[in-house]
Image (cartoon, rainbow, N blue to C red; front, side, top):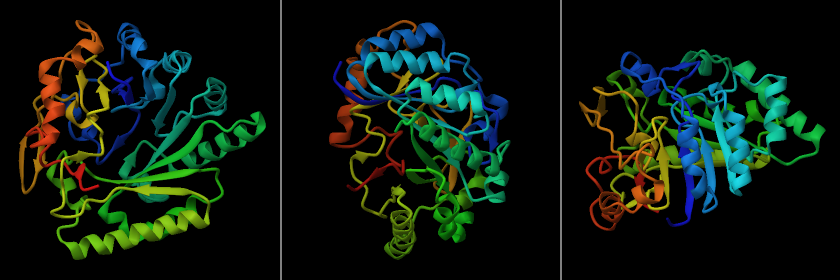
Amino acid sequence: MPHLDWIQIDVTSRCNALCSYCPRTAYLSRWNNRDLSPDTFEALLPVFSATKMVHLQGWGEPLLHKRFFEMVASTKKAGCQVGTTTNGMLLDGSVINRLIKSGIDYVAFSMTGIDEKNDMARKGTEFSRIIQAISDLAVQKKVFQVEAPVINVAYLLLRSHLPDIGKIIPRLKGLGIQQVTVSTLDFVACKDLRKELLLPENEGEYRELKSLLDGLVRDGERAEILVNYHLVLPGKRNQICTENPRRSLFVSADGSISPCVFLNIPAPGSSRVAGEGECEYQRLTFGNLSSESLPAIWKSQCYKEFRNSFDSTPHPFCLKCPKLHEV
């Protein structure tokens, strides 16, 4: 088993929100709600010492898992960094204290839009409560005199929210946020979401959107917030993938192993938008921890062939993915 840059673990596919853009909402009638079992997590422990970072979150709200903090402790004990992404709705005072005492290295808060626009897109969440949780976490870090966790905002930028891009940093300034990672909608689960795509169709659209995002970066610099974004240049995709499939992997809550979270959505029989039409959604897995060790799965011939495909023509499931881009 080689040293990995990260392992993403779907500790639960259950969630207390219904975000409009999330596959769980679009596929709700077919969705498999499940929690990662203790046995599956323990099967991963031997490889954590050769992994830089473990991210405890996939398709659900990780704090709904009753063993979440046990998993953080075990991961830290193994010697690697650990982080998570949360919608922030379960972070009361006691949970915040547990996060700090756990030694978790970073916590990202999901957002889509500012104020009421976030709440409309992310049913079951409240922007004001998320902001309060972030602020309380930052205050408690000062009380305990610790640097961790790094506080990040995972901000999904929808096309309908683009006019508000200049409001993002002013609204987040002064709360103790250290990073903002901006992403666009990569997986389109239903036709109604196609209008929210921010994929430039020509170089002019690319330059226009890049200019807006670069302005956001500058806003962040003035507020001492690091802003990162990824944008695809039309016609310039190559064999590089931001999901880093050669040196990372995704563990589903059922124990199955995939190259990334987008290739393992727990909703059998669903369809997705592809270009101007729709196609059947297909999972791509290479084994399950219930019957094989992770090193054995990683070294399997079919998984090797998948990783090597990026040297020439990527796997058909990956060819149209926006995460293939030019460096």
